[in-house]
Amino acid sequence: MILHEPHRCRFFTVLAICISMFLGAISSSVSRGSEPKVARKPNIVFILTDDQRFDALGCAGNPVVKTPNLDGLAARGVRFTNMFCTTSICAISRATFMTGQWERRHGIKGFRKPLSETQFANSFPALLRKNGYRAAFIGKWGLGGKHPKEKYDDFRGFRGQGRYYPKGKSAQPGEHLTHKLGDQAVEFLDGCSKDEPFVLQYYTKAAHCQDGNTWPFQADVRYKDLYADEIIPVPSTATEKYYRRLPVFLQNSEARKRWKIRFSNPQLYQKSVKDYYRLVTGIDDVVGRMVKKLNEKHLFENTVIIFTSDNGFYLGEHGLAGKWFMHEESIRLPLIVFDPRLPVSRQGKTNDELVLNADIAPTIVSLAGVAIPKIMQGKDLSPLFQGKSTDWRDDFLYEHRFKHPTIPMNEGVRGKRWKYVRYTSVDPVYEELFDLKNDPHETENLAKKPEYRNKLTQMRKRWRTLSKSLE
Image 1: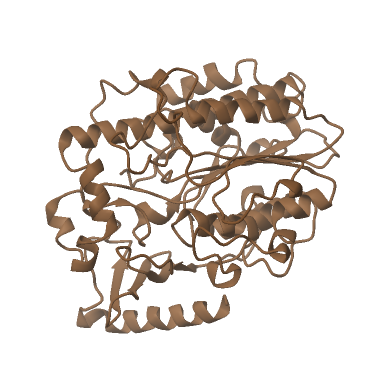
Image 2: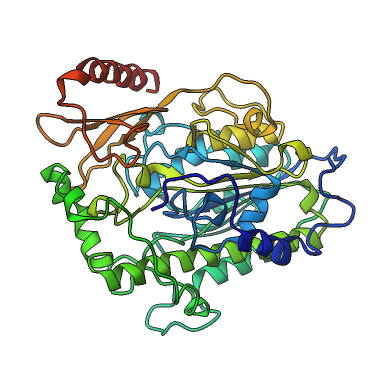
């Protein structure tokens, strides 16, 4: 919804940071700006939310959503402004986070197939556990097959999407899934100690909608009055004009069907987006509880916290809902890396390099001091948030080859300026070309304009090269 990147957070967010997170939260032995002298392996908390778009954070410039605890982590860490998933759908993206591989290599094409024994052995939780880490998983597993309980020291994952509230019961305080998963995360952290490093995967259901329910974004009732007086700005592309610019097969896609039940009139739009933001604020509150517990256990000063999401999400842009396609709202994610060992000169920085969900696994492995397997295709982010010079990518391959009758398959190349898209479910293949510098909202397809023929040919060639290199 908000596609600009301001240089500073709003005043109330900064104030909330001071009040809710850092007033007495950080142990007195670690002063702001100091670099703790810690020889132990760092603990790692990896927080993966569901369908949280890149701008659904206060520190990303959102003028409505309140996320003081995450803003606080960004104020002492590094926030990446160009984080993307390589496939925008839950199971495939989660497999990429685990393995550091594109779908072309890990082969998880849907919701039923599990990681193989070899794939899991080369995933970041398995590698860390093999090297002395206590491994825990809490929340939405999202992959097929039986749960890998024996591969963790503490596994509390659930199948499918789960439910925000118990089936058949009315919404009551304390029953919300986000709150319950938060209790489990805090309970795990309470059992940790300085004597054994740990890696915690905390995977939320929020802010995913409750599919098939007339109340799609089922926020915790404790937040029912939050944002009540706000008027949510409607995206500039959430109009019939821009919807009609889409190819007919997108106009008739699953994304349009879901738009009708979530955003199709002004009252529904306001209700849905406010509830979506309430779900995000619920996540933020759990992050605050986790930070508090880490401080109580004297673990905060040696715990790296990585926060991101599995996919982006349309909030009515282009007349769509859901994700799946290559628009920025669908594939662009939040990413905060908080490392308490960073010097003050690196705290509160932003980084605009193109970083990916495939980069998380090698980053976590590297932070733990473990060799990165050659089979991983992502890159270690450590030099970027540590401020070291390193060669980096200028573009990446996006792929969405999940087969569905009303979700067209698509793939392409997202570069720093140019975006090339191929819809491969239609014959002939439908191509799009966008100039993100001059058209950041992707409103004008340049693929059929003669003056852009050479650029189209260049991007098509780059797609072929990247596709082959990643198999």
